[in-house]
Length: 109
Image (cartoon, rainbow, N blue to C red; front, side, top):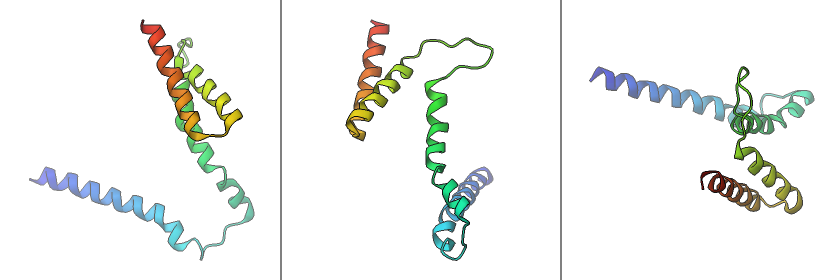
């Protein structure tokens, strides 16, 4: 019973911390002025976070190992090219996934 209480308390406290840190800016952001340099830097935060998530997935090799062929890299390149010409997020996702599935099918078949 105490183990369950410990887990539920941990989930509750982590949820509360996440809510406070994420909603704090929206609730108090108007009262705390940011310098222009900070505002300019914060504009790049979503791009930096997305890059930090995607790049390790596309380029999954470690230092002592040599890079191996990964179809995700080609699928990402195809998706980028399609997005450059069409500027459509649905086509970006569809072209990347279809390319990945086709390359996996060729590699396994």
